[in-house]
Amino acid sequence: MTTVKAQQKLTGLRVFVNVVSFTEPDGGPALGFEYRIKNNISAALEGQWILYNMNKYDRENYGFRITPDVKFFFPGRHQHYKWFFAAQALYKQVNNYENYIVPHIEDGSQVYEELVKYEQQKQVFALGGRFGFQSNFGGKNEKFFFEASVGVGLKWKWKHYTQGPPPETAYKEGNDWFHVDDGGGALPDIPFKVRFGYRF
Image (cartoon, rainbow, N blue to C red; front, side):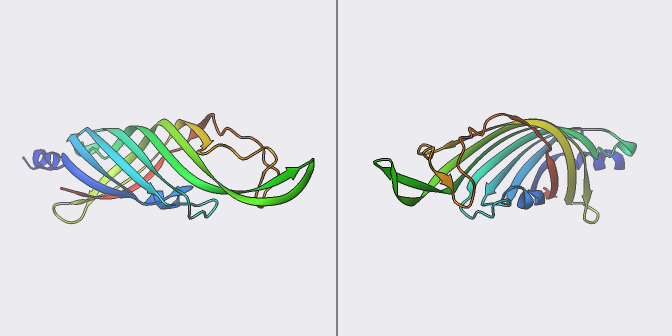
């Protein structure tokens, strides 16, 4: 009877924070909820509010990320269901501003240069899988939980300027001459999660 009750407590609603989201290149707080349907399966949805870029330290970086996943737990020793495989998807949209120096030319000669701010939007879609564990703690009822996982996947990225690209003669402030970059293509992805949460 004790074992059955302990297993039943695994099901239900959970809320969590993903602490890794603060150190991602597109950083910001990430919150989510997970519903443990059965002892061996759960569905979760994580949302992130993107506020900055860790690489560029750009405070004008803003956007969002949505990451749904489905976890399949393994029984393990004593039917604890701690280790899991998760199949996940991801959609991210981020806008940021970039300064370009635009030369103005008249009659074949440069008259003056103007600093112009261009808004660029990045969209990312990814699919992948993660392996990890989820462990409950916090006294007799173990209302808190910790989760860590890492995996591999594939992501597709697109970039475009919301009001048209800079002219070919423009160059990015502090960088070399501007070269057209569509920002597209498929790239490897390594999803990594560290979550702390509460079980209802």
